[in-house]
Amino acid sequence: MRKPCMAANWKMNKTTGETRAFLDEFIPLVQDVKNVDIVVAPPFTSIHAAAALLAGSHIRLSAQNLFHEEKGAYTGEISPAMLTDAGCSHVIIGHSERRQYFKETDEMLNRKVRIARKHALQVIFCIGESLEEREAGKTFEVLNREIGEGLKEVSPEGIIVAYEPIWAIGTGKTATTEQAQEAHYSIREKLAALYSNAAAQEIRILYGGSVTPDNIDALMRCADVDGALVGGASLKADSFSKIVKFNTDYKQ
Ligand code: 13P
Image 1 (cartoon, rainbow, N blue to C red):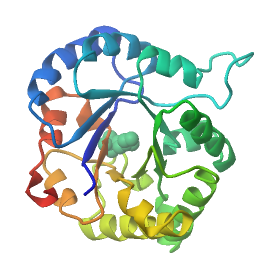
Image 2: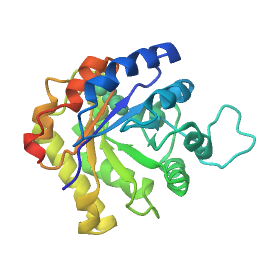
Image 3: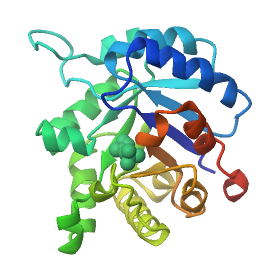
């Protein structure tokens, strides 16, 4: 059985003070939750402060990005060793905002995944189609390419996939449960082809895109939805804790 995972992607939000205030409120709200993996991804500048507050807790710390080299003359970049040193166990790679605004290619993302795994970081690898691609009937082609290229020569351990249809991110327009399940099922089939059926059954596939406390239960009822990568609704401790405490009856 795949353990559900709920991850907060704060994107470019929260100073260190705001990070501390969130965690002071959030940690007690979820301290009894044992059957869900909880991950928080603050901006780089808040990772150190978050690590201090999360020491000894079961909440895991993620970065939102990393660079695909070990060290050197790469002004402004952050290496995998810097992330593990700062207390991260996870890293988000391939978010559509990175692909779109920072022109990160499948090949660059594959290098990022490989170096992250070399440093034993758990990778939350994001994929998803644009509205244009969906309307052109290219959804599965895009998902297959992003998985095939991004996870090339990467073993399945330590990989979490996040399906984030770009048209659902920050728009309030969630994928229907049918759309989510159909995409997640096809992603798992692709993972089975890439690895093995057994490996694909173990990999968690999170849904992302306008997830809220109101729609999480329906999404989690989908057989292949194993959790969520949450943007806007993860910025408030109260709403993210409600997502973490979704109705687990469907996943026991
Ligand atoms: P929203 O939950 O704000 O739609 O963002 C989703 C997302 O991009 C998480 O990585």
